[in-house]
Length: 142
Image (cartoon, rainbow, N blue to C red; front, side, top):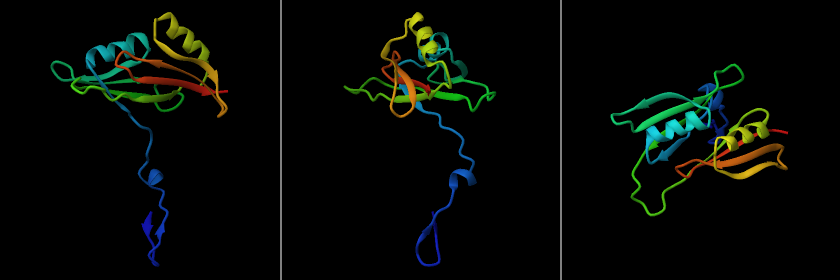
């Protein structure tokens, strides 16, 4: 919003003006290298980068712009000092065949916490919990 001539704030589409195009959630993890391996070897992402010696920060991605923007997830290694560490949830739209993705993850031993279900808001979705406790919810349109 921008200040108008009468003191009112006029709407400005900053998303278009500044070309917002996606988000990259950051998940705190106990071990960045282990988390990156899990996302790549088990969930089918690819390693985009890993930084630090020893590694303490990584980014994984899925997709190549052939059907939309890739999904990026940043993995930040942090201490386990707090009694109840923060956990995040990410919703990942996969486009189609949510049930097939669920079946593939079950075969790989992924910890499913919510089986596939059709939701009243028009999505079919399921949720998993990865080793650092974060929830990843995969969904596609009905």
